[in-house]
Length: 238
Image (cartoon, rainbow, N blue to C red; front, top):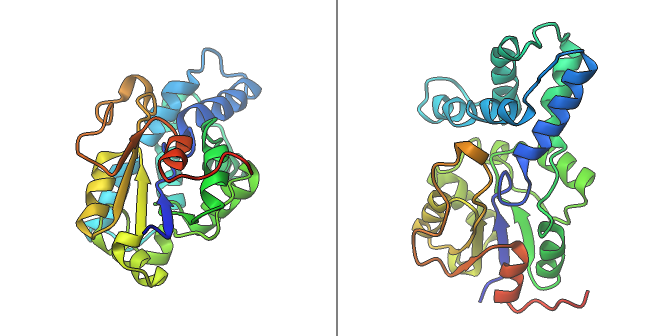
C-alpha cells in the first residue's frame, strides 16, 4: 500500500524550458538585445546541468547546490547571447528564474488530488530554497520538501533515494517515485520504490534525445499528473 508519492520536479512538474525562455527573453528585450532566442538560451543553460552535477558526484569538486551550478553556467553563456553587460544584481535575479518556474497545466490539479490521499513531496536536485520558493510562487501544494542539499547528493546517486526512504521511515514499496525520466525511475526501483512514468516528450524541445516514452514496465505509465491520480484512485472532487 502506497503512503507517499515523491516527484521529480524539473521537467516532470514544471516546464523549465518555456519558463526560462520567457523570462530571459523579456530581460534581453529590456536590455535592447535584438533577435534573442529565449528557447535556445534556456536549452543551452540547461545543458550545463548534468556536467555540473557530474563534477560533484565524481568527487572532482566538493558539494555545491544546484543554484551555484546554474549561476556558473549562466556566467559562461551570457557573452554568447549578447548579455555580458549584465551586472551582478541582474545576473542573480536571472539565476533565480529557476525558482520561478511554472507548472505544466496538469500538475497542480493532479497534485491536489494526490495530496488528499497521500503524502506528497519533491525528490529533486533543486535546493531547499529553490523548491520552497517555486512552490510558494506557483502554488504547488507539497506536504514537505526533499532537496539535494538535504542529502548532499544528486540523483541518480542511490543515497538520495535511500535517504528519502530513511527519513520517511517507510518500507520502500510504500513510496512511489514519479518522473518523466526513465533513468530516475530505474534508480528508484533499484531501491525498492514503486514507480510512475509521466511522458513529457517536449521537455527539451528540439534537444530532446530520450524519454519520448516509457522504456520499462513501470507501475504507472501516463501522460499527466492527473493520470497518476486516476491510477491511484484519487477523487476528482476536492
